[in-house]
Length: 205
Image (tube, rainbow, N blue to C red; front, side, top):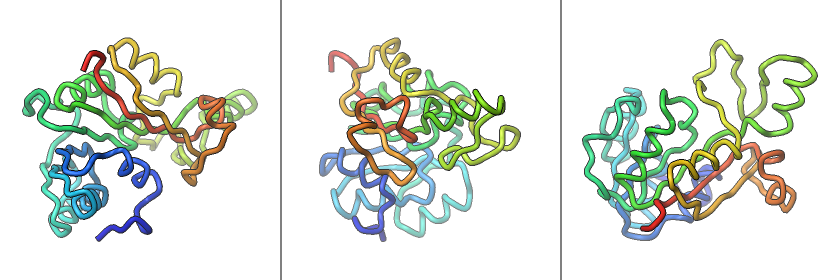
């Protein structure tokens, strides 16, 4: 199915953070593209959690093990340290309690990988400052009244939450909407990064 050349750029970054043969849980796995790629290239053993029926059907067609589940119900069905990696791509901002989900991710997984749109990007700041309206940007394209995003955050917000939850940031990568990075984004991630990607681990593990 997926190959390195066709994998979405942000998913390719994530794939580069996964060790071969790992146990992986992909939360909100969509059509299973990432898990299928990890199975084919890194021989991972994994499951996806997904709520959308059409995406579940695509996962099954792709040979990806998938469980229908609403992330807002929590992850209590999974035992502690059941997985090497728990992945959440572009979904942190759509759940009811991001803090509780993050806590559960790092309970059942030895490492967590999280990506989200950065509300601190300068495009957002300018639109609020000059227009006095909720921003619409390429990484946040919906209007305020029809967006699935209910808990938008900035890079600084997320890192503060990690500190409060006792989580160690192993890697951080901030990119633009084309998933490109540069030295300026690395210097000022909260101002210039449109999408943030993090690899996390509980402190002391």
